[in-house]
Image (cartoon, rainbow, N blue to C red; front, side, top):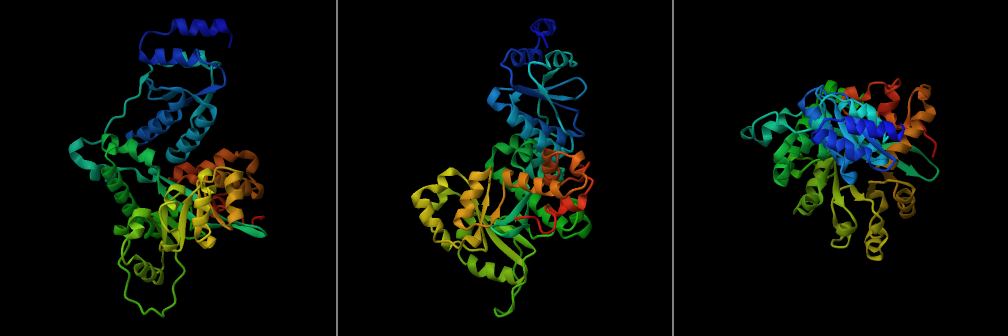
Length: 401
């Protein structure tokens, strides 16, 4: 695109906030991108898409526009943030945005019909309440699968846990103004998780959500209030291998008598995990006193501090799951501490690369698409995968260490 073409496109644009946002985007430096998305199907998916597009454009003050035909356009974003948003949107609503380089795409964007700033609209009146909003949510589009891999020297990689999580940004977009109240947002997440538990109890619904029977226990973020009452069982009865782990908030892990309840739940086939553990929390508590078989530790460079490391060395590393792993530094640090279970964007990319090395259809796919499909809970987010069994398994059998 020549400077003359760009100048002509900018000059020809009609007045209004939408074209003005495009003008600002086209005057910026090269290396940025715009995201263009076909009209999402339904108001809930539209809200999810707008929320993720707006988040991607925040660092560049990008604006989300809506055209007369319902298309959505993020005027500008850094390339890395745009790719992450595109993958998230593809996983959550089954539509993949087009990534358009700036300013080269200027004339085509200026030709869009009547672009105006996108406005989040509520499906239900505020009087309907947050419970009605949560109950009406297209909840598979608000969930994401996260692979927790077992990685240890000399041992074949395997799927250790499959985590199902509510995407907070997507839920906030669905809740609208109610999301600004943390108590209401938390209540909505709990109602969604209750719906998820009910669906997982139905084999057909469970297979639709997971793409097939999971080859590892499920890990769900649950409050104590949603855990079942453990049946009375003799203490000497052998504990069943958990098919489901409940990851409770760190604040609830301090509840009196929880260790005994955890043991009873284990005998009933439930595992207990604690989430929310990070460097700041480790400096304030004795992590070895926390109940449960799994402690979800959030990766950050602050974990290498002396006081934090001293607390971690009091823990059995077999209890730890290192989450938020975003690259080799996190993985190397965890392996050095003896941790063997890992999750995060870097682990999702590693799982996708391992799958693709064993997939006979890999030439028609990309790593980003494989990551997005593996994260999808809605069936439409997995469309395009030609080996759904391998996708559901996360890793091929006997993956190389």
